[in-house]
Image 1 (tube, helix red, strand yellow):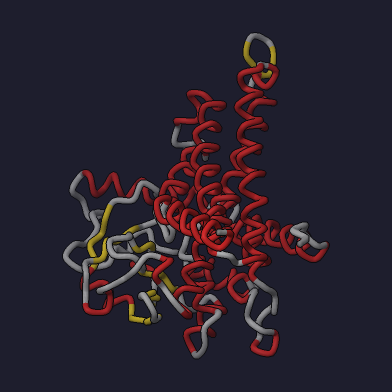
Image 2 (cartoon, one colour):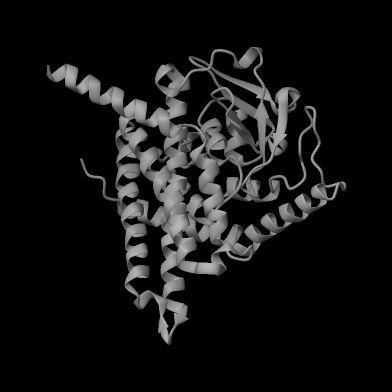
Length: 353
């Protein structure tokens, strides 16, 4: 089985990077982050920036709907929609490449849920594919819901069924919670009639199981993109920053940190790309584990390479670390991924016996 990228896939990845560079440059990212910082300062001071409570949606610092429509018009959410329906007509591996680039750029918003919704049917799919309808997702009791205040609908993945409910209805049982990532607002959902009896990934079946697996894989792809970007940031800083008259990249300790970061990122890349082809639950679990580790540990090591600069608000390193922490708590947890791999190993041994 060949996991190497084709020329068309490489062109897609390059085109997606250029698209995000145009529509979501660093200046736009910093505007989102700084706006959230100003809001939090106002909330701390007891001003009007404090989020609403008791079922209200926090719409301050919400998703840029104009950006979402721009990305929809460019085809980001319609990669797997058939050409006959106005989409691009590609497959899951291509969506993985797009999500990798989105993770590299720290694109905010419920990208995974919107992409999943675009692959369904009806008016919801059309709106999601065009970027006109913002879709977030609810799964596993207690898991925070991202960007609920900016969403139009919520995709609820139950044990055996998929349900779509208006965001305003979901807000009735939602409580805003403080997010470590300044660009990812979170809400905690309390149990309700439509959300009882949710199961972990291995307990799901049918459409719900497929969407859950795809969401876990696409989240791992975003983690991979972030892990790769922090390698670039660390190496670039090590080349430019001088100490004792030499670039700090000349010192063995810094070289070892950068080398370890590269190994993590490339190890995760091989497994994420393989899982995109096989769509095997065990491969997706492995991709989740390696991508989460690469994103979190690479961000920490990147911060170490930057030294005191890395801790400052002006640097982007802390943004990658915070986003990696948030993503690591979404869809497939470390424990669930380990259980999936263990179950696969036990099944293999039993078959051999």
